[in-house]
Length: 106
Image 1 (cartoon, helix red, strand yellow):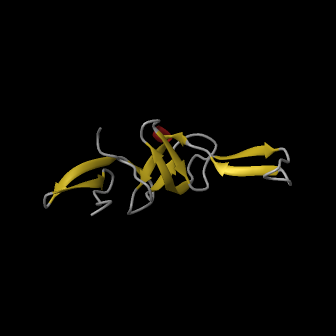
Image 2 (tube, rainbow, N blue to C red; image 1 turned 180 degrees about the vertical axis):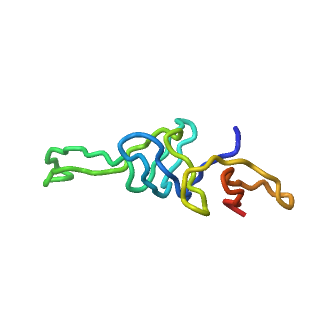
């Protein structure tokens, strides 16, 4: 399994879809499914009928998982989308933004 280019807590930019151009924080990464959940992005609504557990019913809004290829890491310098490269810095493998050369972690 290759090292994760996008991790929980990262700031990402949406590249395609209805939320294109918006920025959010990664809440959950599902590497087996190749999906990601981003805070406030790809919000789905479910109409719920009243039930024993939820007597009121109503509309549930939640962030639906989206494919990881639809997002790119936000550059730490200017917040624009960037690709990620891995470099060895004093014996540690760190993520580096390709666009600016800034270290993302470490």
